[in-house]
Length: 390
Image (cartoon, rainbow, N blue to C red; front, side, top):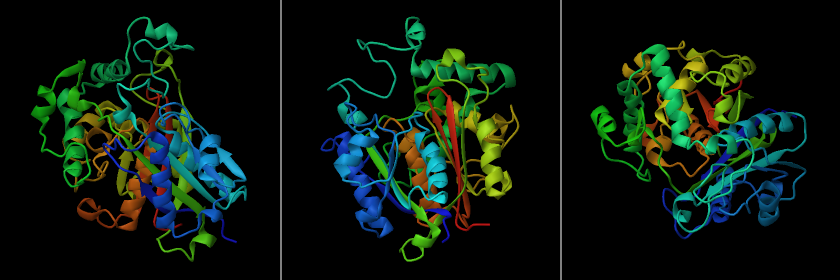
């Protein structure tokens, strides 16, 4: 039996705003759509994975959702590394399927983050006003550092070390917005220029408002199984060619180097498993919580050398028609970011590899790389997917 892991179903719930759905319902709707897309019965699923934390009151952890969905599993995983959780899930499930721990697994995520704002406390590990701060982050919170402030420190250090400019970071946002303009569901679809980014309100120097991701509702799911089982299913099998993860820190005060990430550890492993080089990759799905996130991922994953990311971006290499088109669904910067966006990277990569990208389709897309970032560029997960298996 060919136990090569393949993704055979994908599904999205509703985004960017769905006030009639809570986080759990986003999980369920996405799961229903992914299972239907895969052309299977729910009874085939014997593995279930999610990262939890999106439902609003922590009722969507893996075991609770497995019960709610009535998944009769023999493999379950609730790994939580922030936004990169789902790339780590691909790594774990690829191994589980190869080893026979399960045959067909469902991964889900759901969040009502935007609709929930102002109604009850958020979740996900980041402090809110009036909320008790526990663990090591309490030693940072007292000094007023914020999530965006942490990323601003990365941007400022990169500028200091390499001469990176705000204009170069803005080019990332502009290129991703061009794809969002092709996505009728994207939150922000108006044309945008570099000047628009630079003239938007400063949030945390040097990051402007348009350097920062959207806040939305949304959910996603995908189904992964063996190549053998996939033979009779309706969708093209998308192969997991390589998957790896790494961590350099969790709390930003422990970040050893503000100009790189654990992608430098994970990418060589994933490429080694795939037997591919960077030039074999046709498109990129990067976690774009902020523009600087993309730039650091681009360099630390080895697509360009340290310090060369800014000029490379300014040449248009990540835009539509460029060498490595980036975030073809409009990304977290313009389309959707419900809190942990890593699952959307996998789903859009699969869509492109199937040739279902519509107006945003990357021509002759054979290999896609998804890189999720969790925490404060803390935990990086890398998944390389392809239309064929070497």
